[in-house]
Every structure is written in structure tokens, then in C-alpha cells.
Length: 221
Ligand code: SAM
Image (cartoon, rainbow, N blue to C red; front, side, top):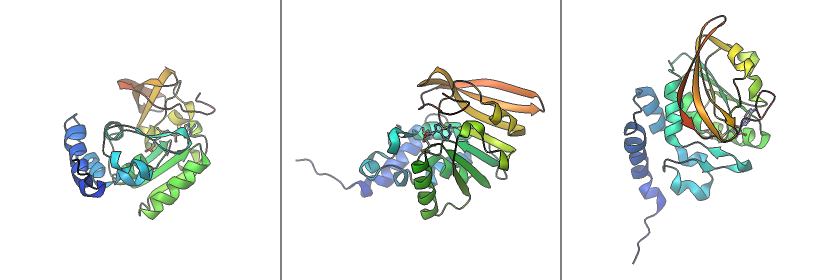
């Protein structure tokens, strides 16, 4: 006989396993990132019928044929941004709002742009209901950035781009970091970190292969 244990009684255990094995076990070290990942309830960002899978290390489908990224990748990209508490961060691709919530636990303000109005609205409502009050969500084409609030200390793009969007480079503060998946096919990319070292001085490095939904827009697909 199989006894089914209700999901909510296993939630804390699932979260701890994700934390120990998928984050610390795979090399995430930044204490602020680990604290944020432990604090944000991923189950509140996935469709209710998938809540039991919220702490498996995998992307999950959300509305509009989009995805919430896997926990390890969210932690990895957040760590790669090398955040400090006073930073202003721009996220492109709000999706469920989960990564924005993680970022908001580390820095002062998060600006997040989402192309699809239904997702932007839903994420905004969800983030407000959960009490995240330092995140501003805007519907729009994130390949153009969000010039009104620039420059940003860190910019993270959570969809795969065919090339580096010029506007994002321009909106990066000197000393700022841009983390973005770039690929010549729309579903397989290399994660790139670009550091702005001066007015016209950018240094780029490859971090790891990743797989994201496409970044669609004027400077995207
Ligand atoms: N960060 C999200 C989360 O934590 O749930 C996951 C993002 S999902 C992998 C990628 C998102 O990028 C989708 O919601 C998609 O609609 C959005 N997107 C694609 N192109 C975009 C663009 N040009 N500007 C803003 N958002 C875009």
C-alpha cells in the first residue's frame, strides 16, 4: 500500500534538499544569494497544480508557454551579478516574478520588464500579495532596457538573445555587470557576463551553456 504524504508536510524537506544538494552542492557560495534562495517560496510562483514540484531543480511551465527557471540557474545567475546591497538591478523577463523576488532580497530596488502583459500583471499582483515592495514591474520590450531608471549596477536577462542588446550595454553603470544568455539558435545559449569598465570599455566572459526561451523584441529574435 502506498501512503501519500500531503505536499505541505514535505515542503520544508524538499526545500532543504534543493538548498543542500542543488545549490550548495553545485557550488553556489554567495551567502546573500543562498539566504535569498532559502527565503523566497518558489511554490508561490508556480501554477498550483505543480506546487509539489516547486523544489525539484528544473524549470516549470507557467502561463503563455513561458517558464520559471530552475532554482540552480536562478542562484547561479544571481551570484554571477556580484551584487551588493545598494545596487539597482534591471531584470529583463519577469515571467512568474520568482527571480525578481530573489534579487529583491539582496538589493535596494529591482526593475523588471516583461514583454507579455498578462504575465507582467500577474507577477505584479503576486509580488505585492507576497509583500515584495521594492520591485517595479513594467510591460514592455526589454531588449530596449528601461532608460528612465538607468544606469543600473546589474542587468540580468532571463531569456535567450541572438546578440548583445546595445541599449542594455548603454544602460549599464561603469563597474556594472550584465548577465545574459546569447545563442545563434533560439533555445540553446552561452551565458555571458559583460563588465563595463569605462565609458567605452566592456569586457565579456563566457560562464556556462544554458537553455532559455527566446528573447523576443527589437534587439532580440
Ligand atoms: N525570470 C522569470 C522567472 O523567475 O519566472 C523566468 C523568465 S522566462 C524563462 C523568460 C521571460 O522572458 C518570459 O516571461 C518571456 O515572456 C520574457 N521575454 C521574452 N522576450 C522579452 C522581451 N523582449 N522583454 C521582456 N521580456 C521578455
